[in-house]
Length: 117
Image 1 (cartoon, rainbow, N blue to C red):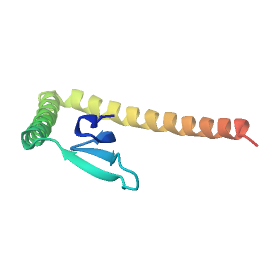
Image 2: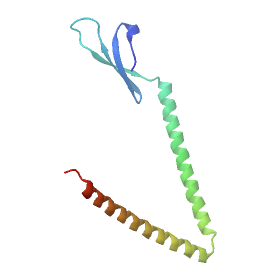
Image 3: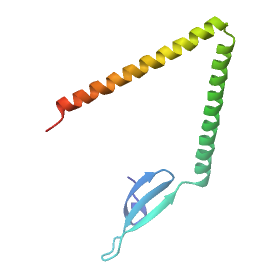
């Protein structure tokens, strides 16, 4: 909460994203309260935008690097090792699928057992 007492108003403010939204209450009787929007400086919003863009670009570059690295690591293997890698992937996928199925089944059973009546 931010206080705007220095301006002769009492106010409550919340900060969400780029705007500071404040509800200002006037001191006089019969006057309505109004909502005041206080924006961040343009330089700040611009810097935040640029930082988000930079982070997005770096994440994309990292993902591309990881993908290329994995592809290269697979490509330099002998054919026998490649076959083993493929078989391991299939086994892992199948075991993960079975584990997920049993987990869902057990969860549903527990839900039925302890469901509030």
